[in-house]
Amino acid sequence: MAHTRTPPSLNDESVAALREQARVIRTHVIRMVARQGQGYVQQGLGAADLLTALFFHELRLDPADPAWADRDRFILSMAHNSAVFHATLAERGFFSIDELATYCDDGSALEINMSERLGPVVEATSGSLGQGLSVAVGMALAARRRKSPVRSYIVLGDGELQEGQIWEAVIAASHWGLGNLCVVIDDNDMQVEGSSRDVSGITSATDRFGAFGWNTIDIDGNDMIALVGAFDAARAVADQPTVINAATLVGKGVDFLEGQRSHQLVLPPDVAERALAVLET
Image 1 (cartoon, rainbow, N blue to C red):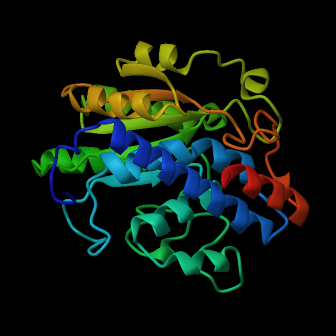
Image 2 (tube, one colour):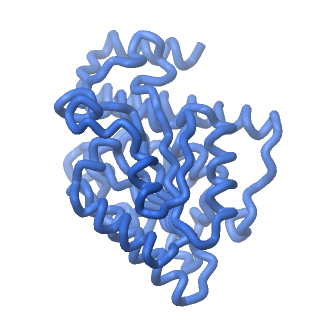
Image 3 (cartoon, rainbow, N blue to C red):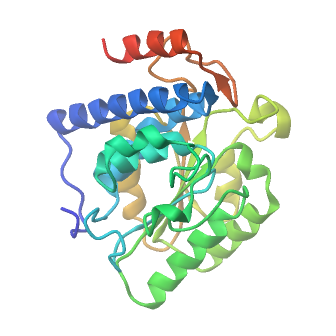
């Protein structure tokens, strides 16, 4: 599976398996952040379905050979959403699940922002918001010039779209017709200052990407079937980069946390236990 281009077919059983995988990843997020008492819980719970669809269905990767030259490239541009990314990588087999217990410890490779200390599975350091798309554009262009089957995928935050460098990269990707580039916007309507829409007034990211010549798709980012279908549609477009605007719900999967905007949620032990009880029921 790791060295094939076409993802496995989707049926009721595989959809159920993906949903179960996302649930497990959410439990890891709760446990990892609970050890710190505060952190990126809401974003991680909301993005668990996105990363599950990518790492367990779409991306062509080999955990046994993370530096494999023809692997698909993935960049988590809003690198602070690291708990869910680390949890996903561990579940996918890139390192031991036991290592998740070291999240944010001094000396751990599992830092609060994604770190290249994890090795080649972290394609780029992107702690400064707005820079990841430029790197992904360069990777996609290089792959095309090598006539390589490699595709580049990147997850952007909706608040991150306020960075000017994003739009320079958007223009370049369209100009070069990078059909091997797929952007996923984690549209959770939350940033440090509150609602992303209230801060910037951006109501339709796809309208803006579309104006620059991108193929655009709007979906529910917590709907596994919609996610897989969007990636299928993106691969079918050869001469345009694709943006998938995935509307996600912060706190997804834990009913009493859903919809609560908190960039760094305080998560005391009793709240973490309640959240785990919901997820493990």
